[in-house]
Image (cartoon, rainbow, N blue to C red; front, side, top):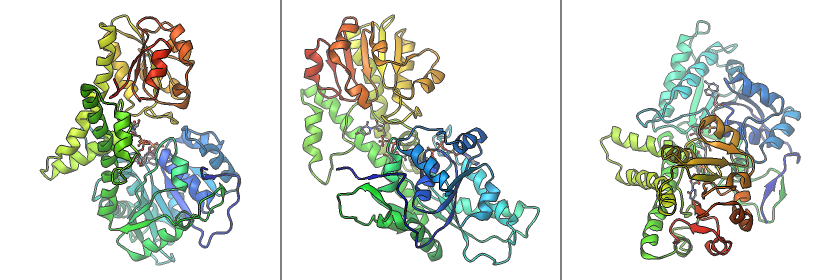
Length: 480
Ligand code: NAD
Ligand code: UGA
């Protein structure tokens, strides 16, 4: 039985209640803010995007994330969650301020810290201008929690920028009292709310004891799992609270993402070798995954990893290594394998369709993974571009990301029914393994498609025999 939270369940009083500000109301900030409000803290989510804040005030979600809307609406009604564009006002009120803004990949592969830097300066200015600033009027210093994924050393950089911001302030005397800690985020898109309530661990990097104590108290309901759950057949087990220095906490985040991405690239390398020697990668993954030193998760072979984080975080870690004249050969190889997987989709199409010019190809699923509308670094975009370059007519379908994809790819025809995408198609590619896409009616597909009725299963989502029995030509990854 799956453990679940229910937004309507009321939490008992908290041992210690905090005023929390969250800067950046995206996938991480909004989910973090909503979950902290649910357990009883008073939370304000701040974003510079006025449209986003207006939407949230009306209870409309700017992103698709299962369970989020309920949580936001219920906690806004309870008066524990509010939205604002006013960072200074939020800093004035907050005991703890999370920074959860974007850190995209810069042109040279390194992390672009401009959003983090802008926020840090604003925090400094606001702190200096806070009524009574300069006097030790606060019981405890403001704790600035970095949740954005940032290179090692960013904690110190943020501290420096807060000081700079404070000294730029025209009012106040520049003396500010704050702590900077790192609390990297490990949630996955598509299960972000679930992951926030039931994390494998909470990591905290801090160099001051008082900041650590504040964060321990703030996270208490998550560590001790004391919030109400709908169904909970398991005995409650405390979540490991890993405390370390700032640099190590920042490195834990990059190392975790790089390891997971490399694990996928590893199984994809094995998948290619499986095709050559006539083995089935699904059986191989099952066989190795039962070894608990390896573990069965993140061993699904296919098109490879995309999304808003693995690509940029692996690139940032490679860039950090190079800054110190270290060649990160394993990470380089992990990226090379991943790039090759996308190209293999095109070669699998060419193998059976030969020229792609004029051929109709249905792309089933466009988001970078199921249960999200996120298209950042989605394999679908690269595959659609490659098909376009070769003169193929691509038609895309996604249960939620269709409209967004149409905006990004003018040459991709996006339809809102999977069978419409498949009608008259010479080939179909399973790009994203949404439940709806894994369970399409194969007989119906076979009747709609044109010869050679090729299904390239980019996620090994289908049973090859069932596909072949319905009259389609099947090509998976590592399971020829
Ligand atoms: P996002 O792009 O969804 O959201 C970032 C938000 O910050 C946007 O709404 C933007 O308007 C806002 N913002 C930017 N600058 C601002 C400023 N100066 N003042 C106020 N608001 C500002 O990003 P995200 O996916 O939530 O990621 C945020 C960080 O968390 C990144 O560093 C990312 O690597 C990390 N992270 C993301 C995930 C994920 O699954 N998306 C998981 C773990 C960690
Ligand atoms: C990932 C991590 O799993 C999170 O722990 C982390 O917090 C997050 O990045 C981040 O830092 O933003 P996310 O990108 O949401 O989460 O999605 P994943 O489920 O990890 O999938 C990433 C990519 O790998 C997807 O394109 C997915 O299709 C692919 N994947 C995943 C595989 O190809 N095979 C697998 O076995 C698993």
